[in-house]
Image 1 (cartoon, rainbow, N blue to C red):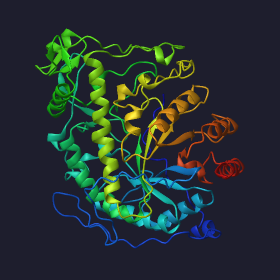
Image 2 (image 1 turned 45 degrees about the vertical axis):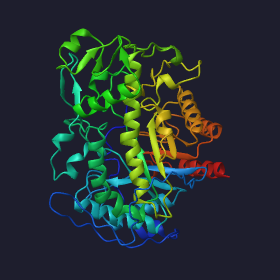
Image 3 (image 1 turned 90 degrees about the vertical axis):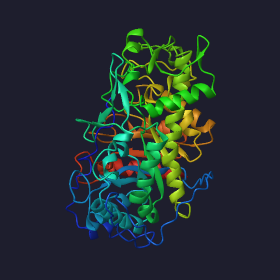
Image 4 (image 1 turned 30 degrees about the vertical axis):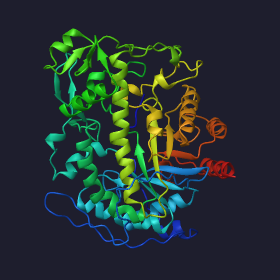
Length: 499
């Protein structure tokens, strides 16, 4: 599968049309409150929130706002930087032109965020946000690549105490690495399951980003957040569990506590070490790993295999899967979504939190209930959610997650309807709103990978609240794949769907 790659370059603005011409027929819909710009103090990027910014609260906020209407048109993404490069924008004039292009269509909101978290970029982010707010386009602050930008919150250096650990294929526990934002080089991996590490990050994230942007925030957008972030194997090949960044001493302590709380035992003794699937790996684990039977994930799942028939882990491994997926949902997704709610507790425009999950990385094969759902011959996709640290039902059940989007990659014939249907079943079972992205057009235009008639048949059948598109460039008249007639037909279908 061609997973979503680095989006630098997607928003290279080829905008020679004067802003006035684009906006001539568009009246601003909402005026925003002017904002102050960030100031810094040594050692921590600290922003002074505007006087109108909501204050944080420690009181849990469990109310789901339900403010999104059917056919909410969400576009990915608008990126800012201190200067207009790397596909990001930095000036009000660029923002005006971009808003003009979006307002030519019934766009509801956009994914929004900085390319980095330095003061100059946050200042540009605030300036651009003010322009979007004036034109009534909802801004959903994004988690995209947050875990790869940890150094921005620690004076440019990675906090070694929060460095994750992974294993080698031989079972040696080593410092964990992850792909950088260009998906080329390797950088230190953050300890996502460690509550102390996440609390440290969230406190800084609020001050640097969430609080200053609160006056312009319509919602928060969790973009494909999972634990596995390496170059993926073939679509029907399993992911190697030892590559996950989940083997720090802090996580070992949490696992030991979980085993005690849930009576996880082997041969009559409480489990106290990380599980590995071979004696040879356990010999290299430095006393922190132990061989346990019950690892049943097949190396390859063949074409035509019913998803419900794929072998499942048992014994200690079943408990490890439960621990891993619960801890990631609670500690990373749960704490980020809670922070967004806390910062926006007094924001009347705040619409809640969206989690957007890739169809093969957020859905676990253990969650699938349809016996007719098989591995397709075209893309050979398998729902490897557990292997990414994700169980969709756990994400949907979080108190601060309001909407979950099934993010797909074409073509439809690669069982996308089966994936989307399972997403909707699980999402609605958890009293969460369903959204879908069928309109992913990386390097092609409308009707070139999937027919629009087929996409809209699925939309009308599944009735998503949110309809998302990627990338935003496809809406630019200067884009090589832009087609005015097809975009007009898309808009016509969307408006009809809203009725």
